[in-house]
Length: 209
Image (cartoon, rainbow, N blue to C red; front, top):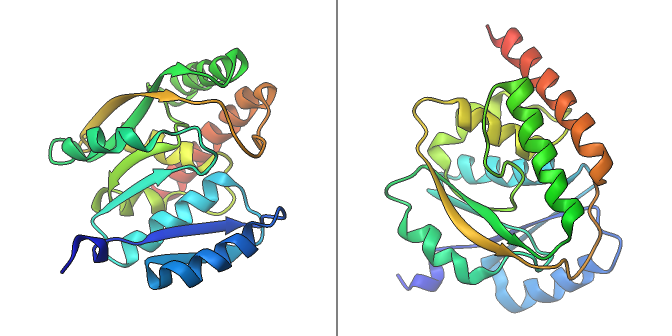
């Protein structure tokens, strides 16, 4: 089997209205089954990520690489992630250098401190859109996050961090200026949403127990 046949690109088209659908159709014709596209009504970035993770779990795909499509994540760092895959179950990019402005840096710190205060967990970069994860460690926490969760991708990071059996790794990355699209969540909303997320996590744990 050639290496080019050992992976697929899964694209979750979360209700795009900017011509993305047409572009993906052309790319699908070019790459065939190696590019899989799922289009749906808009449900948000986090829920889109979780849908992709669940598909990977259902298909017994061993690893998931999340890489956002707005040009901020440099693909050159992937090889650093890949070299650490045997030592860690989940590897996050840590945005040590950011070109997207001080407001986004502030938002990350607000989120980090809010999670520490309310969820009692320290996540170095819970919202980073650059991560490599083993799917076998995702199945259990994904069951605790339903479709009503805000900041669903951050919820997953919190649950993984709370797990005593998950091995965490970090790769320093440079985060570029955004080339396309606009963030769906304003900086001023991060703290409020993070507190709401912590409440949802507590309710989820209470129902499970």
